[in-house]
Length: 299
Ligand SMILES: NC(=O)c1ccc[n+]([C@@H]2O[C@H](COP(=O)([O-])OP(=O)(O)OC[C@H]3O[C@@H](n4cnc5c(N)ncnc54)[C@H](OP(=O)(O)O)[C@@H]3O)[C@@H](O)[C@H]2O)c1
Image 1 (cartoon, rainbow, N blue to C red):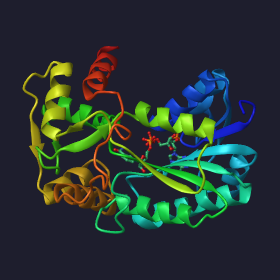
Image 2: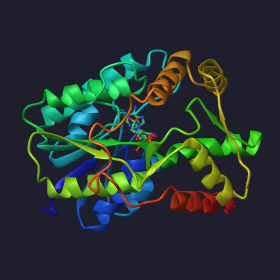
Image 3: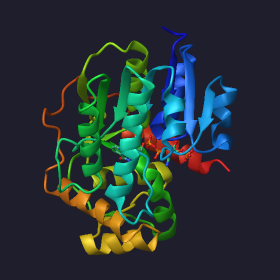
């Protein structure tokens, strides 16, 4: 099994890089995909085959997937898109079609908590639509991973902390949210890609070590970064839209973010099954915060 090729999309990103490292460390043959050969160079040095190209290019993606025993996929996004769902839907169709044409038997597809809902969830609607495309692919065994909010989303808050001394978003301050480290998703994905021990379409939720509110997460991050009283400020939806467009989001993508936070605030983005030992994963937000602070201190 170790000689069989495993291909990882988004290998320079949060989840893909961790999956690639784990598979290489376990002795698997890995093909790492991204858009830039330069950014893939480190993984090539670690022993991965690499291929650079855009996921809008069906020929590139089909050839990149060909010969793979298993593939990890995600839906890449761009905050400047004029029509988010049209762009991401087109990408999603290319990814599923490339898997079909390449004849890949097992796919681990990154989705999200909330992808069970068809509409009214902003960004998450595209992941629902992608799950539907995967489910229609009868020849392929697809493991749909539905994680909560990535800890790594807080990387984007560092600039705001430095410039404004706050973290701000449109999420209610005390809303409990399942939050997870990319490495915990990667652990599950890498294990599944190597084992290929499921049939049909299977959903797996991943909820992190515990639910955390934005107020709690801000306080933990503030303490790690030496900002003892770092406040979390809830913007109303209009103010949040304005804040996102001011930093380069298109109006349409800003709307998706705000619609997602509204769905979360209204209690619609939840685990249908609830937290269990199986969907609970080990890494604590405190560990992530300490590592982020350490990386931030390094020159
Ligand atoms: N953030 C959250 O809280 C959250 C929660 C649940 C689910 N998700 C899902 O997670 C996804 C992101 O996963 P991630 O954090 O692991 O990735 P990421 O860190 O955002 O990185 C994106 C990866 O995709 C590649 N990429 C970007 N655009 C591409 C394109 N047009 N064609 C081919 N490759 C492209 C990038 O490669 P290069 O830039 O090197 O070219 C990079 O490797 C989101 O899109 C969302 O669907 C996120």
